[in-house]
Structure formats: C-alpha cells, structure tokens
Length: 86
Image 1: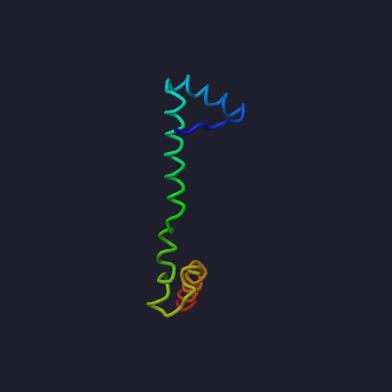
Image 2: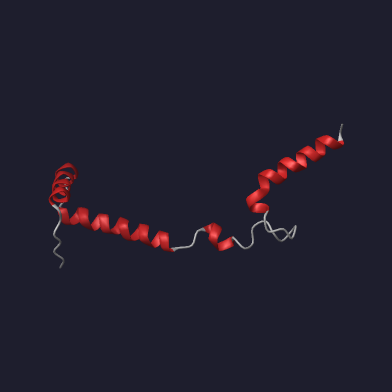
C-alpha cells in the first residue's frame, strides 16, 4: 500500500483525467508508473550507435573519421571525379 501527497494542481489534473477516462486514480497512477519505468529502462540501455561506435567507418579504410566526415569526403571524391573528366 502506498499513500502519496500531490500538489493541488496535480490533484486537480488527476481528477480531470479520472473523469475523462472513466478510470480510478489508482489505475491512472499505475499506468503512469508503468510508462515512467519503461522510459527509465529505455534510457539506461545503450543506444545502437553506442554499442557499435568503435566499429563504424574505420576497419575497411583504417580511418576513424569516416562516420563523422562522410559528407565532406563524398563531396571531395565527386569533385575529384569531375575534375578528372575535364
């Protein structure tokens, strides 16, 4: 069992949602906590980028800056290509 004191404004919002959703305060608070915990767990997990950061853009070329500079490098390659055709 848990008892929580809410600020007046939060209590008013909870009452409005209770009526609007036709749910009990307890149901709304439980759902809110489930969403909060899911969000907190998601933030704790490393992102796909963080998991593979050390692998991106470096092994085929040996360069470590490719994932961050690919646009500039692509522009340079295209300029070289078109200069060669002139």
